[in-house]
Amino acid sequence: MPLNSIPSIRNAVRGVGCAALVTSLLGACATAQQVQDPSPHSEIVLTSDVEWGPLNPARGDASPRAGTLWGDRAAEGASGFLVQFKEGFSSPPHIHNVTYRGIVIEGRIHNDDPGAADMWLPAGSFWTQPAGEAHITSAQGAFNMAYIEIDEGPYLVEPTENAFDNGERPVNLDRSNLVWLDASDLSWGEQGGGADVAFLWGGETDTSARGTLMKIRAGQSVRLSADQAGLKVVSISGESEVQIGDAHAKHGLVPGSFVSGAPDAANVFVCNAEADCLFYVRSEGHFKITSARN
Image (cartoon, helix red, strand yellow):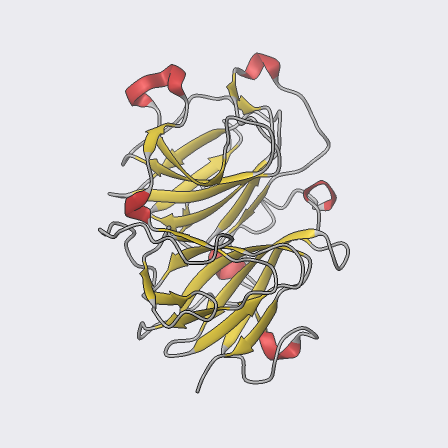
């Protein structure tokens, strides 16, 4: 569903339960090394490899920290990046020149109109912020991190005097309100795939961009592939590993890690945790989820 066709549900989702997200939400701080896969079209970026800088350089040290996973938020085109917020952070009212989407990885995030009551989104939750709408962003937690994604750049922070209505409406979706489908119930899944999916945005046609949460059940392995453009996958929670293409080596992932896959290449994701593992998948059209169990 495109953002501009979603009605305003910030208030509608408050306190409403649809399907519980059962997952262990683990910390995102870990040391690791950047891994370059032999395929020139695949890449693994671990959280510890990210180069951090101020999200809003004009605010200096008062700004949240941001680090790129893919693309360039300062240039034209789509991009995805991590943002870290200090405990107790609260921004002044502001707008952005472009619409963005966010997924909480750790801590609790509030993003709403300046006068709205607090709605703290826990890890695994999803929100959108339309371009031009005045809002504030706050964080509550000893450590707070989110994945942010835009379809076009550059990403700018501007004063509320420049506010405008672009026709989109914001979404705040608590993780407890996610609606999960067994991957085997989808026409492009496989029976016994060991994963569930929750659709977040997009998907008007078989080839349009879309964002999906994928939950791999504890102890399961799945193979992800796409016939068109390669997949972009961000680890949101859980202890997991990835095996790129035909390579035998497995690389450990921590929340906030990023994996890109080449078209027609299949990457295997393994959930090692005693609880489920959660991933965000950005695709161009459908992607395939099949069981990778031996």
